[in-house]
Image (cartoon, rainbow, N blue to C red):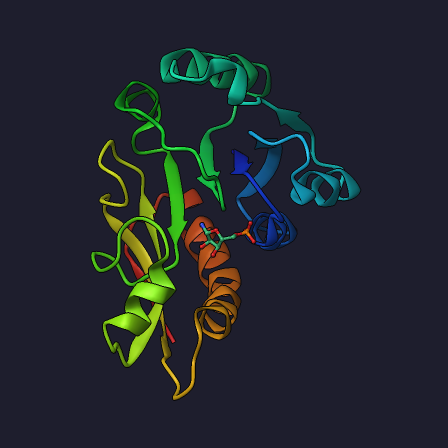
Length: 197
Ligand code: GRF
């Protein structure tokens, strides 16, 4: 049975593009929706160009009422009936109320080697700490931020003279390889983690 995948974005959606473009041929999943909290997210245009349904649920009218925002998310999801959700550059924190309804079926990619550097500005913090390697992690989403079971990681070297921008670019290339690989395995029901390179 083909698994239906909803992808949440907030910006350019480069990870979303990698995921959508990977779901072809004998892949056990297909994209059913790209949802953004930002109507001007560049990824929405890329999704539409690929024939994927899109939706926008702007978080701003729900300011201070996360459950109401998440109820609006779930109302859209009910129309598209995904089996899995992939967070891909989605910049809103989801509460236990939402995550609990999707636990075991919702993934995220984070630009650090978790459990190191949860939260934001991961590359600047890794450089500040003098790390000699960095990378990205795909994990199951649980109510605690960036805490869920690890499903995959990819490591890159930190090079002399790296800035947060040069490091982010190197890590992003690995994200585009790791996330599709993890999604395919996860969609097949296999939760064994993938470690790259
Ligand atoms: C990526 O670094 C990803 O790890 C983080 O958001 C950034 C932008 O992702 N979650 P994308 O280009 O919008 O997919």
